[in-house]
Length: 228
Ligand code: ADP
Image 1 (cartoon, rainbow, N blue to C red):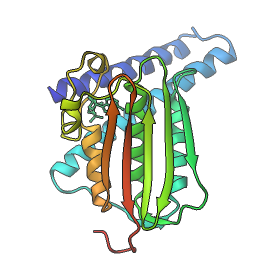
Image 2 (cartoon, rainbow, N blue to C red; image 1 turned 90 degrees about the horizontal axis):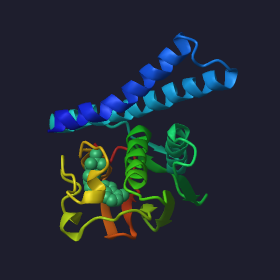
Image 3 (cartoon, rainbow, N blue to C red; image 1 turned 120 degrees about the horizontal axis):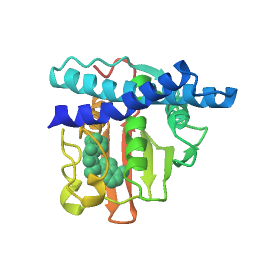
């Protein structure tokens, strides 16, 4: 099932890349603007492919207990900002509004920027994917004493109560009709949870059907070298 879902997800970006490549090769894109559009679709879809493949590789590494983290003390606001920026570059016009609220008093925190960036991409991609027509997402960072809080909120379809305790399990996909309209592999949230827990943190969700969901990540401020 997983292989079928991954193949299904790979197919759409590959088709787009091929179509736009052919359009450029055979001169179907004539004006400079058309050519630029084709090139940006190729770049955008390649980025999507990279994320998908990265999730699959990560899942394998987690399963084999070989996933490694490169932890260093750094500006997590910058990590989040970069992830959102790269996501925004892959969105088509009118796809979604992503609101960022990062206060500038967030202390430096030990984290793996690449892994945390991947969590941000996974959470925001879901928020957009499982939104109805109003694709609005907000991501905020704040801190309370020795805890950093990251919240990702959407106004989407929501998560059925019976599924709340399962969505972080590998391969779990809700059988809700609205949710099933979207393609997926069911590994994004399980990887996200693994990454957050490897940082000594936790992730939880609150959701109301038809109103939206909020994923809350709590990360402790730890000293360098404290995490393995
Ligand atoms: P995928 O999206 O590939 O199915 P995930 O592990 O990212 O896998 O998510 C697991 C399931 O949790 C999804 O299939 C969906 O049912 C539900 N889900 C995740 N994020 C949201 C969200 N923001 N709103 C509603 N449902 C969500």
